[in-house]
Length: 363
Image (cartoon, rainbow, N blue to C red; front, side, top):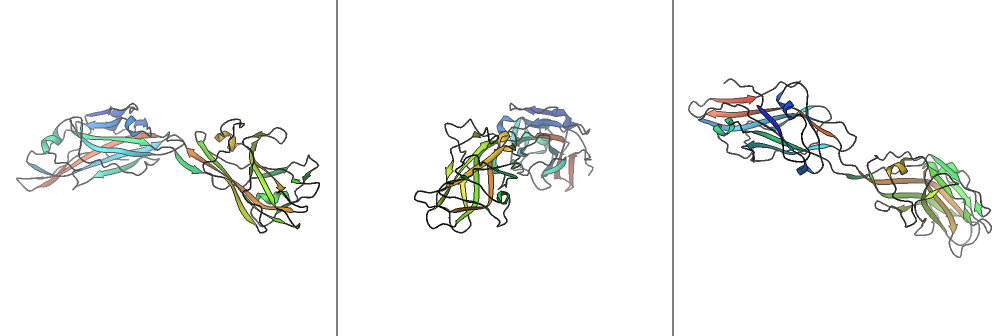
């Protein structure tokens, strides 16, 4: 039986506050798309509805299946993804049967997705006369992705400096050893006159947090141990700063070690996924622009705990910082070029199987 090839006689944007631009383009084989910057709130997005296919299914036919093909892509933008929310048949303006939406993200280049098939009636018992009706068709609705929590991963600094401006600061030797994990240590030895290590400032992390993201937390890790001396313990004070050594902006009070430094190299963690290190004295929320800047730095110093004695040495192998953030919701555009529909049926009086189709050749 010969297949009929048609395009929809009507293609409109329906419902929602975020509407499709140029919806009639899905009825033309010209590589010009119907488009929408899809919200992550699916119900805010309009349906793209194609109807009036002009099918001519025989009245006595037994319907076997309906197949829809959609040429679609997610274009533009810098964040998130587009997925189906709804792909459903429609008749007289009302949805019919099952929603066959796919959870697969729309590709960045135009690709044809197939819904239904020769033995899939989409959960309906539609008749030939209903499919032949000008109000029969298919509607789809896209949605953008919500903001998603993620992190930069543990990141090492590229630069290390120390402040030796005070006479009671004990300078660090082999300072750049803190930049990599190689079991080679930067060291600073305290004494009765040098009771703080020189404050270290570690920066140039090279973070690239998206500009629309929300910072959720900061986490610092220090691999360290103490050596030398006969009594007493060491503790670190850790904080985040921005600026030059002479004019730093301090984003938090310093956090102290929860336990004294061990005698073997062990990693201590400060902060975490939901810790913004913010106090009432902080200058404001930590933004992507702040953490991405080269002068965003981790600052820390070491001192003896109460009752300590002289000659304890602080040893630091490596330091990392992780930024936890919520990536912005999708700003990508849902683009639909072409839609096809095919009906599989058997004529009851002749036993002849066939199909009636609306089809455009996809490039």
